[in-house]
Each structure stands twice: as C-alpha cells, then as structure tokens.
Length: 159
Image (cartoon, rainbow, N blue to C red; front, top):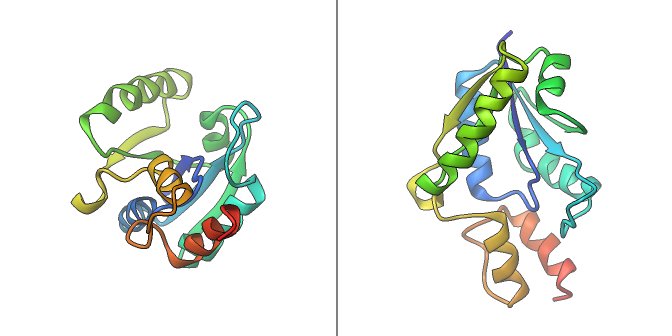
C-alpha cells in the first residue's frame, strides 16, 4: 500500500487544504492528514478542534485518515510506513522554505519522498492566516472554507 502524509497545522482547514488532500488521494492508496502539535505556537483552534474539523471535512473521503503527531515528521512517516510527504505549494514564495524542508527531511530519512502539489488556481492566494484575519474582522469566508469551519469561526469570534 502506498501511503502519504499531508502534515500541517490546519488552523483552520481551508478549501485549499481539501483540494490538496483530494489530489493526493488520487496518487496514493491512503493519505494521512497529520496535525502537528507544537507547544510554541498559539493556534486559534485547539488540537482537538482542528482534528475534529478535519474529521468532519476531509476525513470523510475514502482512505483518508486524520492523525496528530509530535516531534519529527520523518519519524512519524517512518512509524506510519509512509512513502511520501505531501506539501502544498501556492506560490513561488512557498517554494524556498518547502524546498529546504524537503532536503532536510531527505537527509534525515532518505526513504521518504516529498511530493509538491499545487491547489486549484482559485486557492493559490488562500491561507489559514488570511481566513482567520478576514473572519476576525467580520468578513465573509464562505468561499474559502468548508461550512463547518464557518460555524467554528463564528463561535470563536462570538458572532
């Protein structure tokens, strides 16, 4: 079985994330959407909330599993017997950072490949950070996130 891991913070999951998961699912038998647990970041949504939002969105796609991980991504990939790590690229500005990470991961674990996938053009400008900012200021994010995320954002910003 060819398995891939799509890691991220998913704070919150966006339509761009969903698009990348669907694209990855066409290439692999199983895709693990892995939420990174990082005590140094202050996410809007708790780890449990992010896992739940993912389960209610991309977790409903056949052979997509939602998980969390701590520590090195390559260790998690080795534990899960994953052949690849999926990374979404929106713009050239993403490439430099992602390229460095891919090379470091290859150095740490040569058997895990990094696959870069681009989302649909309409999602290339989209980021969780921008979605949170628009929602915080009272803007409409319905084009950018699944419906369940809109509800969650409204609760966070008390609307």
